[in-house]
Image (cartoon, rainbow over all chains, first blue to last red; front, side, top):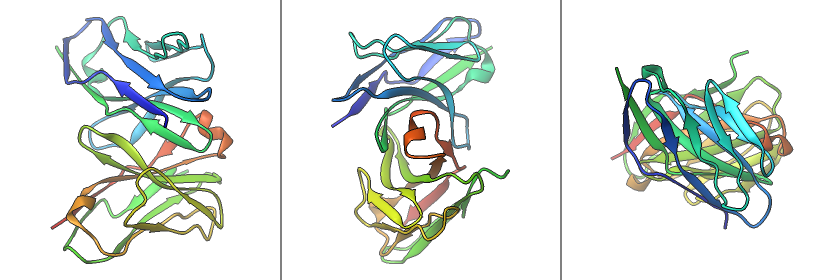
Length: 110
Length: 115
């Protein structure tokens, strides 16, 4: 079945550092890809999405490009802030359900 | 709009007890779903519904029942709780099953402990 594998954490960075969280997927069809973010004590919020190959999703300085040839959707940000500390989930959706990666905890230190 | 609401926020059960986790949304969304979140495993789909009167199983349905009598409500029932059901449970909704391609809106979660 469809699945998502993402980089294990935790990841600890200093403020203004460059962030990459790797995500690869396995799917039989043509899924949509997502990054969700979960702040402490809250539910998940959509960060960005891409619905077809070569699409780039972006939001709040975060970017990810749907790469069909490498089945990847890596999350990047050029300069992280303390407020970006959260758990990040890569996910794919095909038809009626959504599959999530295990999540990567990011801590940004001042 | 309140969005997606869940009650209770916390619950402790003894093995064998039953309970219902409540989920409601006020966005007139057709699609609703339940996930459980366990450390190191991300979110796993338990059950979902594409509209009132229609439900289907997700990845980990055993031990859980659902019903969808109205568009707004999608309760999750544990008939006989087991320690393996200790988890954080999230309810989510989107405009339609097709719109799952766009975005799901998540509730704040219910933390359940089964002793």
